[in-house]
Length: 412
Length: 120
Image (tube, rainbow over all chains, first blue to last red; front, side):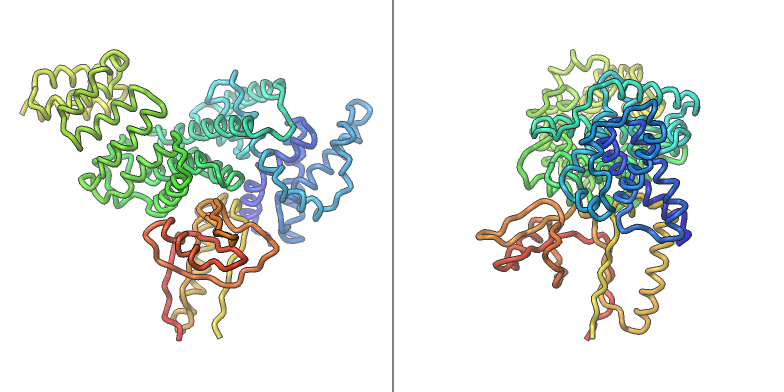
């Protein structure tokens, strides 16, 4: 057993649970992280000789906790020990520890660890960065390169974020159902932001950001293993799987975004799609609609279509109608209008667009869709006007180029 | 005699594997599978989807359908069925029709499947 790569994967997998449990024992994030670090060092020394433990997470918690307690006793003169009831069980052996890990306490441990990364006073990118550092165990260098900043700048951000986290009051009691639900939805939002940090990238940076998507999926699956009946966590994981399945088809050779209709569907990852589809079905069985679940259902309709022409637009229209009722938003109505145009024609879609003129008055996609609908209805001058407005609002060269192509078709 | 070889490991660890590690493991198991297949000794081989896709149908007065994999340690794995179903719901229906007075059936989709030879 000298496969160091295997040990790395085992420690990465053990990390969320181990750091979370150590945080509960010591109620101090720095101590918990150092304790886990120490356990990792010992694992690298002893696992190649003794073989891997049956339960690497339990091993890390046991070894990490003991080494941190030893360290505290050594420095005892200065630091006070934690409350007796926190460390009273320090005589446990490994098997007793393993037994306790089976209890539901550790699902709340991992949730708490993720939740404290989501400090509302921290900007979203810092929440994500600190979660990648603490929960996922990515190195500062890896995080810095994914965020395209220098290592020093990222180290500073993470230090600052950790300071905010240590100063915040964290409830260590087992959360009640309402609080647990709130934590889950905050953490789900953070994981989806992390996914989008990777997914929305284009250009030269796209390649280095793929690991962010993969990490978000790993965290989604982790959360779902801990909370197997949460339909929105099923929905979130499904949504990420179905979107990430298109990764290989989403960018052209110049790393420009390829629109869904133009993607080579043979490059879609069928394995990820199959898993995503099962999760969508599982989520829908519960009959409690939620926004991740519905967005995943939309992605599922596209995933099931062999070609763009096979897309079940009536189903997409229905899903958007539910989404609109659940979370009214002009952008959702705009997207629904696209589906409506395919099902009931451009005139019906244009009607849906009317109330959106004001809220979406400076939104690129609004004018892109409006132009396309007007063009379909043969109202060329109005279409040209909308397309020109869209070009003036385009945020990327690819967006502008797409509209210009439409304008050219209009002029020819 | 036919033997069923069941694979157990930490799922979280597999999900943390690098692409190289995954490729190495798959190559090793495929080499073994090829050798067995060429001797006409390999039946169906499957890789299950993650446990997060699983459902469990447990015996009760009316069978109860639960989210998640079979999680008890008191009962033992006694057998399996491989069924072709158009949806998860259809697979759950099959499990409902199979469940007895006690015990449980876990329904889990396959990620990969090799039919192997028809063992006699």
